[in-house]
Length: 528
Image (tube, one colour):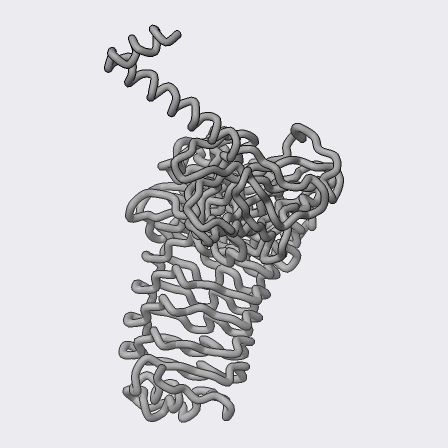
């Protein structure tokens, strides 16, 4: 033995490897010693010792180390790790799954139950903690089961140069982004939105376990860039998930066997079509001008005066003899149908929609989100007398519309968000909101520089505030009875001259006129 030692001493290489081996063995032994979790297994302990190292823990600011994972719930908890050591140490959070509140009984795993660190956590679940320092680690426990479990937080720890045992680690991240979007095209998951508008689209937002949230998702088609846009508002949590579903619009190419002359009639399902004619409150008139050849359409009930309450479910013809629908004027005029399915409508060639839903007194829901109105020039009286309480017009492209006269007159919709409306081509807004039930009107995008007629625009309107600060009144020639009997008590104008015109019609119109524009005594416009 002495001879062996002397040989080692005389061999520098052997001596080096011997010293290194002893040091490695020492470090492994030391690491194992200080990585052993030795905290008490009883109760919601607030102190944890690992070898000679000591730490305190808090759960949401209260001393303890046990988290209650309530059944069918996602629990978010801030764990505070406090070092009681006078030197830097390495730490790593671990966990046990317990079936009792004092963790006297544990299980290896529970199907579906997950312990993860939050993407918003202030600190990581492992790292270095300074002497007498602390770390706040945000954890998320997902328990989709019908039983309540208890998660006991533990620690692997060692000196700052130690490698840890890595046992029962928390190594999965839970995304707490404000919004996660899942897209489906014809029920197939997709990473992108479709590049065509030939889809019906819907959005549903919910929490991570399917619970209801306040978030509202709306889809619109960006004509300029030819793409779908998603806007999600009212996000009230950091875990809102929205499912965006695109379904290919059904295509129905119909065939008329007669000669295609003006007035040729084709009846299919609940609809009647006339070639180069438009429906006019129960009768047909010739189209005087049109950009392309096509058909007008009307609900047959609206023509015959039958006014059935039967839901409208017939699929609309996309084309008839390869000619599209170009006018939907008075399409549902006076209909008493209790529901109208608009999902098959291809409106991309439609040029006029005046009085389309006039006096539809039984339909309270109209899904217009798939409408392509980019070629529409006439929307006057479109919703006059409509019973629809909600109108989502976020997809409407109104850039070519010239008349919105009476568009929402006597409409039952209580909230009208028209912030996406392009009214730069509109010349007539007379009676637009006459007797409208909307208490809130968002008109901030309105460009009225070409509007000449606003007579009766807000007469008998229920809107409590009229913010017309975007209104340019320079082209106005008629604003008689514009505010007669309106409910508004607050009014805003763009400039002094606009305020004067709103407040006193007779002084502001080029040719004077009726000395009273109907402005109530309780309403006065001021510059915003």
